Image 1 (spheres, rainbow, N blue to C red):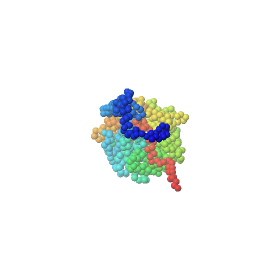
Image 2: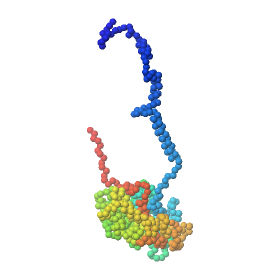
Image 3: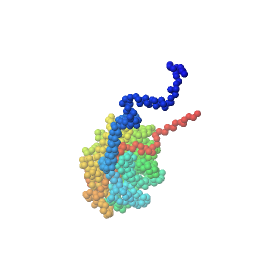
Length: 620
């Protein structure tokens, strides 16, 4: 039977095609075996599938992006692992084997002097001394202050003795606490880096705790404050024991110590307000104590503004030793600190009132003492402080006019410190004569060094490279160079190679005018006149009054290390406060340099109202 093949040819169905698939497969296998195979085909037959795969695996490694020879791959991986193990072994040895770290760089001379300058305040403490006071020849003293005065009958124990005597003058003491607080506010990080922050805060609190005792600090309105404890006037003759006539250790004092109060003392009240206000910023982390300081400061400043008058009337003990020439500068100074402590614009309005600036001497440019910052004249310090406000917050109207005036006059004061302007003479050794050749110059020198160094830090923090003196531009480094030159003079870079800070350097005054330091700590009590022999002896003091800044040399760079000549050898609380502030400003420590821009403004509200929040999203 035939059918038609559509591709051509017959289509025949035969029995031959009925063979099974198995039969046809066997026929194909026999045919294949009968054909001659070449060598390659024979090798395929001899090697099974497993052998072929094995040979390829041994020769190559497929990494996906490339194919590598297996030997090269294994060698590379082994090398990397070996190097890694070697490095790990070396690092383990370095960590486990003890090794010496390089010692930190030694502190600079300003830091070394600062440690000592703070110790002077420990030696000047009155009252019950803490165990860690660190001055072995001092002990508890004047434990009945205030209580033994029948007109006061309240405890006035504590505070600091002023100088080589045992009088507690509130006026310079308060200024000293303000200066210490100012230096902490600006340079807290430096104090912390050198390990003195707790120490200086403790000293400030020692002073402010005492100042709080000298008036009714719990009242909003007061009518009197204590001006001083002890008396030193010997001009009336006689031999009545007092703190200047007697040469006694404070621990041995047994004579009456009268208390002087004042009912009209704007200068003293405003300075004490400044001290408490500045300290409240230092202690802002202790809210209870900070608030207590602020409350006391408000009462004091209010009292000073209402009861006008100088604290040192003619003929008084205060006028002999720490006479105040005016209270207008204290109004500006105290008002500035009150504003920073409270943020109340009323205080800023007082501090920036044009009439206040005029009375304080802001326009007395031809005055020979213009720009000399002292415990009596705070205007130069107040101008620097308020220039800070303009540089960083710029409150604008209605304060801008007087703030700009203060800023310009601060620039003028800085110019006056430069030798080329001949505002002040300089000794041949390089000391600026801010007191025009009169005795006890160093207290003024260190204050000027502080203001110059601080103002240079203000300018740097405000991204201002310098300031103008007329048409001439000077960089901030010029101010620092001046400040360093004056402190270097104090610390020994002078014609006598004498350090005027006791205990610093190899050569320093050994016969300091100081009762406690000059009398041996031998358990023997020497009466009022019994200490005279220690005052008159030419031997060095048996006790070192570490850190004391003595009064200083004369206008010819000469110095007499004579105990009885206080114009050369007597230290004071106010002078050391200025020294500490100047030293910390120039101390070179491994922390962020410059000032703390913000802490002083912590109580100041935003200058401009906060913009309202955006409206909520519209909902249909």
